[in-house]
Image 1 (spheres, one colour):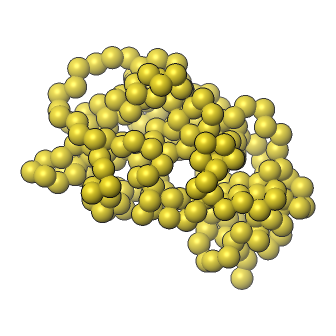
Image 2 (cartoon, rainbow, N blue to C red):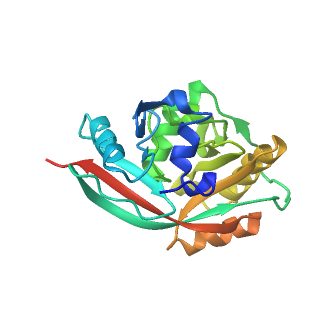
Length: 228
């Protein structure tokens, strides 16, 4: 589990650096505060790190491990789910006109952001996920119908995440337009935008490629829970 590139182990890279204050740490492991997301990571594959991760599982909530390489299943845990992902990065974003009004989202929008994420399931989204970075959205008649924002932030990189559109308003280019805006802001800060996508989601991969993202590496997502 050697760290070859910060994005090979995005959870560990983000929550031991710029976002360290948002995680619970035990020597050899970390767990993101559940209100921010279900992610966790170990420093390495040693028995001590595995035991540290298990010690952080003090409730019945599962944790997500996102790693480029294989990881052991710590004794005392059970694997609930695994899925292959692609990690994509963009060195530049292809410009395109935007045909809709985009608004910055604030703490006042948090309930609608959570409701939209729970409806559309763009990935793990909890009560404080919106505080991980800047989010933008589209509103119609004062109601949030689409959004995109930032999540993990390793040094030099920021993840584009939380991209979703209400089912009644799809097909209007909101997802691509909002992602483009988020990624452009990341690039303007001198950082590289990255994202994760299920390897089977060919439609999303095609969209991301049209924006300027390319596949950097395969990544595996593993959902672990404390064994009963």
